[in-house]
Length: 216
Image 1 (cartoon, rainbow, N blue to C red):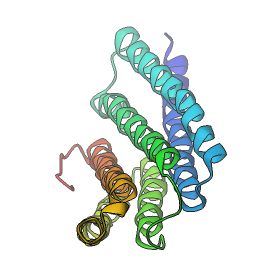
Image 2 (cartoon, rainbow, N blue to C red):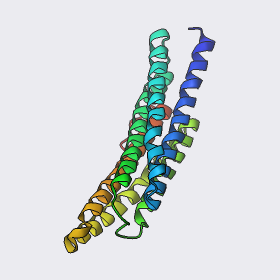
Image 3 (cartoon, rainbow, N blue to C red):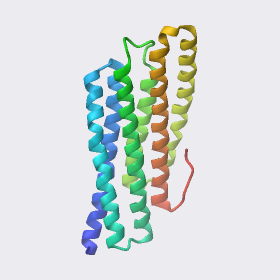
Image 4 (cartoon, rainbow, N blue to C red):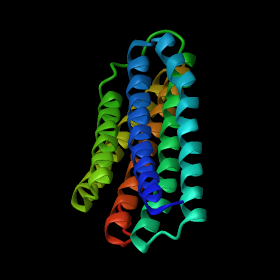
């Protein structure tokens, strides 16, 4: 692999990560839109689209293998290459969680047991975290990555508030247990999406500075 080809492959690797991030963000957004409207058709599209995101992970893994096996990346490039693989894993898991939200939506029987206000709020924060950390990744922006990670605190706070509310509803009315159980899973999925966004923030900091920070 020539040096020019090497630089081109690095560029392709970064571009694939950014595109995978956009697809994962779309999956999160659409899974919550499907949940809000109990839109089974949209939920199915999220489920079907998961394979496209999985294919991106395989493409990125292949690209990383080529760069490491056919060249000797500098220290900075090696941080980028290895971190891209880690970021791809986090993005794939985020899309898997969107897949799980879509699956839960399909299992909800009847109407929502409460107005959906806090859950879309959690999802909006998670989407924003992913969008902003992808910008931080593209620009090697440590400060932005660190500030994005702090948003996860709000997701965690909302998670515990909704969790307590749902448990109370289940105790008060057994007929709500089935739907409330699905909602408990969904808020857990969103909380985990926030955690994966934090992981990507940590990867961005490492790529740009060589420092490993615990931002979660």
